[in-house]
Every structure is written in C-alpha cells, then in structure tokens.
View 1 (spheres, helix red, strand yellow):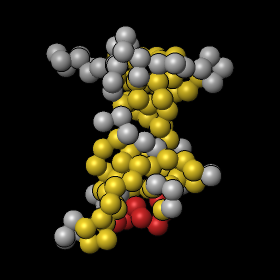
View 2 (spheres, rainbow, N blue to C red):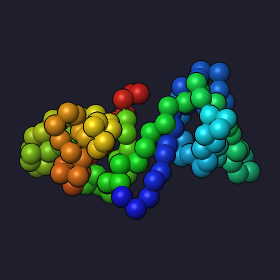
View 3 (cartoon, helix red, strand yellow):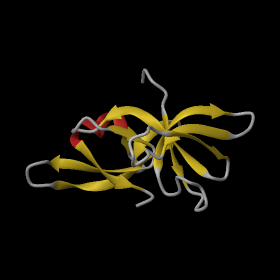
Length: 125
C-alpha cells in the first residue's frame, strides 16, 4: 500500500454532514477530531471546511486495493466476491481490519479477492 487514506462516516445526527461518508483531509490526534471538505453549496460557491469530534464519526481506512471496477476498497465496504462474474455466482462479505490485515469476512485476505470483487455497499446501508 503506497497511500494511507481515510474516509469517515459522520454518525452524529446533529452534525451538518450527518449520515455522509467524507474524505478525511486532516486527523488531529491530540484533540481527537478530523477535518474534511464537505457540503457542496447548491449555488456553485464551493465547499465548506468542516470538523467532527471523536464521538461524531467512525474512521474508515483505505485497504490499498481496488475492486474490479477500479473503486477504492475501504474498511466498512461490503463487497461481492465472484466465482463466476458472468453468472453472478458469488457471495457478499464485509471488509474489515482483522489480525493486522484487511479481510473480506474472516477467511479472505483482500489482496487475494479484490480483483474479482465489486463494492455493493457499506456496513452503514
């Protein structure tokens, strides 16, 4: 993995970006908060810089792999792993850090299945 990247699910219902998954721009470990660009204004004025404190978000780390469509796979994604893409034969697993490695379920190292998988959702959906 050549990049360490994070996204965050904003879980605090009272936050301006409640319910969204955002790209984290900065992590402040001392104050336990993140900074991100969000809420694109409808009138085309740009984006708003926002912060979220420790109980307002859940961090999702980039696994270093992409699915068969070129989408980045993060902790918290649900992927469909295909035995046969043409017949849609396969099964669904959630991606998580398990024993120091990104796994799809408990038995599939993400590096062994990412090229035959497709992101179908997140654990929050």
